[in-house]
Image (cartoon, rainbow, N blue to C red; front, top):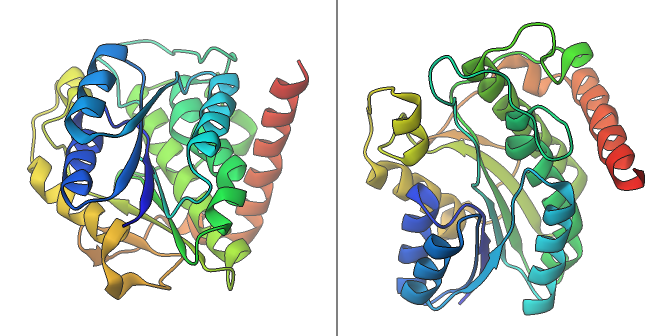
Length: 266
């Protein structure tokens, strides 16, 4: 029986994952933003529920602190919460900290949450970090992380997912030999979720396909010790080349830490 924290567990893939893992007997902490939907998931799964708006870095810190209060050991962290493409024609949106919304929620939030929960993950004999990314990736312009020059919601989403993948590879290198692994995946394409419906894109894959791919990274014993991989569904894939560029990753990490430090001291 594992202790598992799932972000974005009040809807879509996260909710399906929570339901399946609870059925298997795991102890869950579920995160969501909508109080009613989060309460419903907690009632269905017997999970501890923690509400937080991941567009606020202060609330990300609060989520980490409350999760650490509820468990002295975390076996799996699933960074699933995210913001999609947005409605067609929607303009640039900002987080509560003034950062581009998709970069903030899809990348900065899981980056910070993972950092804060590393001590709790290290207490497990072996632990897994699973970052839900996307096959849709675009190169990042480090001198325009907030996309102030030219904005597009799809482009913003894809850049944020590339950043999350690059961070996953950094984590895997950093945590090598500690018993904590870090992997990321594209669970499935355009599943019938709220964010996909909002974007008005048609659906392609089923929620079940995404669920099975994500479950594998969370619980499959065949993946014990496997780290630093990007999975496309059930298979190992290859992310965009920029995610493997060590110089780019170091510069992204430096910029990220500066953004987090600036917000913490403001």
